[in-house]
Figure 1: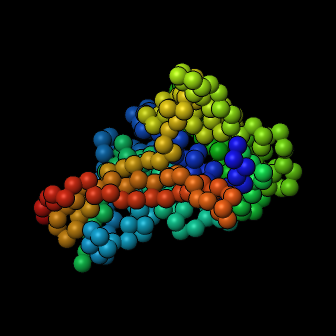
Figure 2: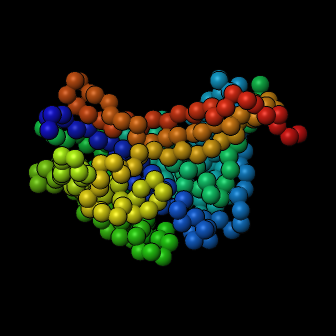
Figure 3: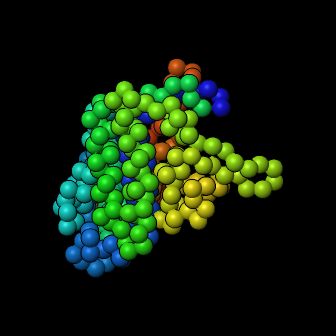
Length: 279
């Protein structure tokens, strides 16, 4: 209601979908295990890079790790499905997608980095083919239902929304659709809710559970839009516990009036007390 212009890339929308997918997979990891891997427990995956704890190229390491995941899951194409590949996609976005994939698969793998030495306008970036691809990719979500029907239901909820993105990218926007992005309900001392089609990108909480009052989402229950995964960094024989986080960290203000979702990632050192790695 502050008359900001909205700017959205295909990467922003696809990342919102895959982050929700990650929440769901983690909750139903054992039921979905046969869909992803052919082993029990966790397998440690390692990738190697140059530098030290504070100089290593973690973007490259995360991307390499997504490749290792592809080598160790039943269907390697899942990596390319999760990672964005649109005309707007940058290497930065690939890192975000790689961390999301790592988070989605963290019940099956542990990860180690080993180091040696209100809207006046909406702008959809990319090409129409990008938005068509998101619509096609989202149809695959139903393949990963854990038996509760929720993944299939979510796929059905996303379908008409993504269709409207697709039509808008083709120059056939629906004013009615874009006027129903988000609505605020409630006030006073009671709970406050959001409704509108944006809540279809928040159907699962961070535990992977379906929001109990959906299509209304309590503002206090809006998921963070980020995923985190523990990673052990082996810095020349000294191990550090770290947390790798990626997703939507907020918005970027464009030209003073536009808002654009801001995808970022970070690696946080969990403790400054290193452990000597086993030889």
